[in-house]
Image 1: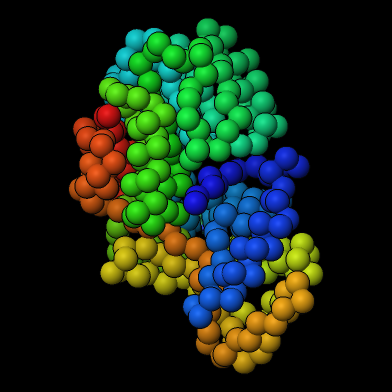
Image 2 (image 1 turned 90 degrees about the horizontal axis):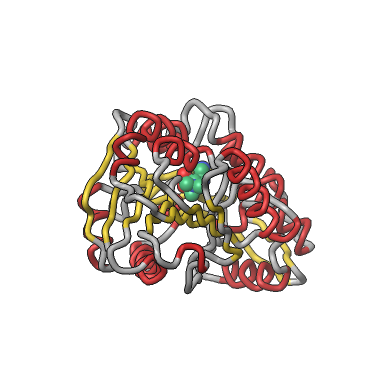
Length: 321
Ligand code: AVJ
């Protein structure tokens, strides 16, 4: 399944070598070659993603931030007194701070992340800056977490999942993820989710194919990682970055396209490429608020409210269990 995107890389999230190898060999062995997007985020990939968020074409990060800045008071107003704010996959906590600053009624902050060191650091920084807040971090894969810490047991729960990270999931995985979140947060809980919205193709493609080539470097870095960690011999000069809008599936697809017919080797196996053949490396789904509401409903959530930015559009939606 899905593993959350993270903003900082560290030792304890170094990918289990054998599952990386297994996933890469399986993905390259498919008739339509594909690699899981979660493997983008080695140290260099995490650095490149940070750089992407600063690009003029890559609007989602800054749009969500300014939406949250503008609407923080309204979002805070839906959070009950004494609530536990549960962040799924806590990254850089800039967006969390916007909420906490506007919502002093939050009693407990529960960041959930699979990386203990990233979690400890985030928890320590928040605890220092919000002395009245109880911070109860949970080291767990947030897609699999089954129970909240005791500190958050008897409080109203508000989930928080910003960044359109949910866009990396297929619709079926979105429903599964939202079902798990509902089970974790419980009856009556609220859930604030950041989603990128469908818009004109030109804006969408530019966001994933920037003029400076940072997204191309991010995409190609996956081959560098395979070369280094799995003894691959990919020649990066034989591939080009491609970002295409798949309107039918409502997603941006990233691919690595082979410019020429050639072969590459990974872990002693040979993989042949035709000229023009691609490796599908990422899906970034774009939603409508109504469409997302239908997915949420399938998972037992009711879409109560949506805050939408001006163009290029991005939304933070409020779900209720
Ligand atoms: C981190 C999944 C939200 O899909 O926009 C950015 C990742 N890929 N540019 C996105 C990404 C290429 C990003 N998410």
